[in-house]
Image 1 (cartoon, rainbow, N blue to C red):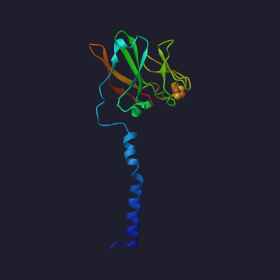
Image 2: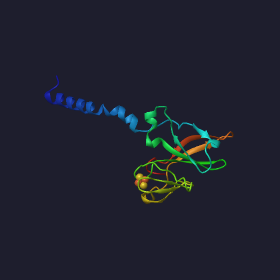
Image 3: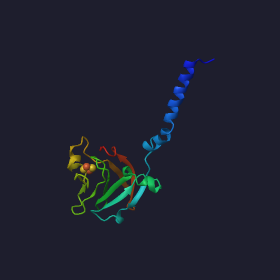
Image 4: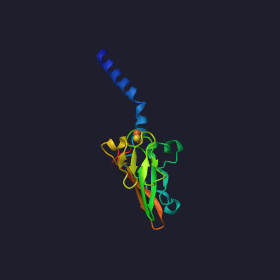
Length: 164
Ligand code: FES
């Protein structure tokens, strides 16, 4: 027959597990889907993006509008030449505001919060507080273009919010 001390230990263990239970499903949402290959997702045809302009892209797209609003899924794809495109996370590596292309120059991204500037060429922070971070490169959206000019996102290089 269990003594009083055993019963108290069992109750303490059970209450500890009960306290963690609500967080177990949450963990699924906080961690990226791991162990699965990044999806190959069509973004656009290159003809649909004029040279020197950007297209905002959700990657990986879930189909759920609420989940697809997640800033960590937001990317900017810029067409830089006839058959050249680059893509980066829109999450500024400073305090995570969303960057966008400077439409006047077409060769830098600007962060509206504290003025960080990144080059379109390689996503490198050249000004503002992002230029003082240890990793100054925006995470890159890996892109492929097929014969027909269709652009596909095939993965992400770097850690969104922290650079690469
Ligand atoms: S969040 Fe982008 S510069 Fe501060």
